[in-house]
View 1 (cartoon, rainbow, N blue to C red):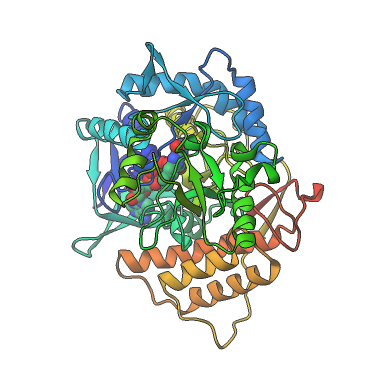
View 2 (view 1 turned 90 degrees about the vertical axis):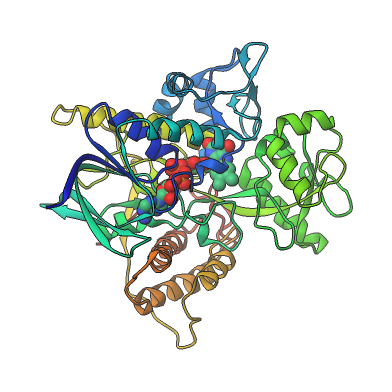
Length: 515
Ligand SMILES: Cc1cc2nc3c(=O)[nH]c(=O)nc-3n(C[C@H](O)[C@H](O)[C@H](O)COP(=O)(O)OP(=O)(O)OC[C@H]3O[C@@H](n4cnc5c(N)ncnc54)[C@H](O)[C@@H]3O)c2cc1C
């Protein structure tokens, strides 16, 4: 006899926690997470949440900025929902106790790249994610929600084509368990661990993508992976994000000679979208023969830096760098998975009972390139809609599906060379960074796809958390490489040196299925 719940939430970032809190009013809830509750991407979010609540702002302006960043591939209906429902969801977060920073009694709003007005709410200066995570997890712990830490979701259980439960691995005892449910929500976050340099913590291993794909869910837009231009670049130190908001406050990018190079590449200079800043930095690094450039905030008042960016200031100081007096060495790092499990405007996948939200899902709201600080917002908007939808199951609620034009593709058999490197986490990260990273080519992507296909065949059946994660990364990486190979153009976060321009023929989505 297996335990049965109305809802199972997999993941304890903002998505799992927020949705669990909403769902408990409608039924029994089990929240499963593979580490401790606060092991997630959410805790590291710095900049904040975008919402058109300022005097000179409007949902219409937020809509236009989101569409411009999305480079022709945003699902307009999803964006409309995102921007229109944003102010109400911010009120929900305030009511749950998230203490956003204020100035003269009003919520303080900051500017980030590619936003036309200041519209980013933040908490604790640059500790927004931590404040959200702590607030929501405290609420969850005092609610009637069962929480299982150190439990890895390994397989989705299907019955008559719909979801009936979940298989898990107890990471401490090694035993496997099964749980039944009516609704399963994958809230497993992104896959930054695919790449050698990443701002993401170790839990970001693409598990949700792999679980859903194996169960028959559609996966879409996987070629779009956002690289953040400014991660701290210090030898031996894991890349640490230097938030977009630092450039929004006036941070200047300089090459090793001290020259401010961004105006040579684009009129928006440091405030251009992430893909443009990232590639400009790479070109500049190549030109000057260096592995990094510098972010200069020494012209800002030291007290402004220390109060507005306390985490960044403290982290750098702890590593011997006083950013009020010295330039910050920075280089790009993998940051955000734009594609994911394809969902409609109510968070539904193509499998009955299976929902997805947050970074693991693709609503189409980000198009080919996510506008900064729209991801935490997307969780609130579409997470809430999932809980509304499951309350109304049985009623017909009109749903839109992301993107009109699309091509469907299933994974094909690939040729294996004899001299493939052995499968392993560091080999995988190096492969994806070199061959499917910021600047890609057909040749490199083919090599990546062939190698990943070979590893899919050679890896033994997973037994523990580490081997499950590697298996999931290999599959997720393969989906990314195959999609990037198919898209013979450059658009948004996807750049091909052999197809450097956008093509109107590619105004469509790549949907990957098991076939
Ligand atoms: C450094 C950094 C800064 C950022 N700054 C911002 C920002 O300012 N604004 C913004 O909008 N976005 C920002 N982002 C992006 C944003 O933080 C994430 O997209 C968002 O927090 C994702 O939330 P989530 O709940 O979907 O996933 P996560 O917060 O990553 O949570 C995923 C959860 O799923 C669990 N999990 C994964 N696989 C399994 C499994 N198989 N079984 C059980 N549990 C599993 C994980 O352990 C984790 O608890 C930032 C990201 C990073 C890394």
